[in-house]
Image (cartoon, rainbow, N blue to C red):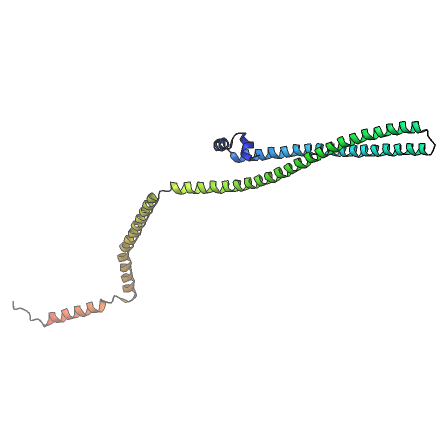
Length: 241
């Protein structure tokens, strides 16, 4: 039986339409497989019962065949006794005839049991074959269901990722990065500006430290200039009063 027909008890096209409306088709498929396994168990019980009937029919056949053979042997012995003079011929014929009638009846019963045995053996073989096919098909559906469950997980994860990616606005992300870059550049420029502001103070401190250590490099030139100015002042003639 087709899995979808078993699930929905409708035609193939209606089954696919119904499947689309299910909230969880995987759970429905799992339940269908469990139902199939339950049916297999019931079929196995029926198979055991049919086999039991076949076994009983075979035993009844064997018993009827033994009775038929026994009555035949008895009829022959009765005739042998009559031939040997141990039994009256009329009595021997009467009893032998009755034995042959019983043999015929046993043979008739044996034939009926043979037909029943053959019938139930055919039913048993057919049912066993169907159960084997159903088991194999159920195993195949279980494997397919495992594959589909794995694919469903992958597709769900992929869909989630793709949905997240689709919601990402690349233009807004680029704009945000540009704002960050502009902000960083402003901070860097401001830091450099503060650095330039403290450089003169550092130079002045260096000059003071150098003067305390040994004088400034321009100190000698200043002394020379003062000496020259003093000499020039002496050489100039004084103005008469």
